[in-house]
Image (cartoon, rainbow, N blue to C red; front, side):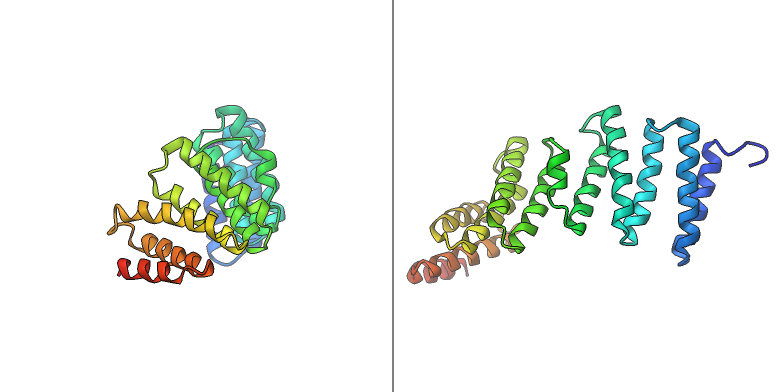
Length: 238
């Protein structure tokens, strides 16, 4: 420090290293002090619009969220995401990582709409986040909100990679489960059948997904009173 000052990579690395040592040693108070110091030194050195400062925000946010202190981590992630977006755009890996973290923190804190209000982007990670939020809505029986998110996630994945991908059909499977919960068995069966036929094409790699889609399709048939179709389907799949 005396020879090189505090505004250089080497000193900042040592401060972060010390923070990490405190963190893994079960001394979160000392870790926080050093992570905050590193972030503040970065701001003094490069300013509050620089991606390096955003990385410092990310490190501190990860520390807080790892402790379950989401109310402290979320503002830092939002600030970092704005810096990455204004510097690199929405397809930058650092921005995408920030987005994913925000989505997960939003889920943990019940702010399910936050990611949707803040971001308008079309990449796979955004689709996955939509699906995660849709699943939470599904679990809490907010079926219409869940349906809209599953459908939006599916459309994004279809636009990016087409319909012949595992991720797309997993989203479809989730959408079909939603229709089952709403007792829309015919619509659910239609979607399950589409997913089942896709997974059947690569039965070795997609064995578990195929079993899941087939079992769900049989359940949809049975709920519709089509017990013979369900039995025949299950026999053919053995």
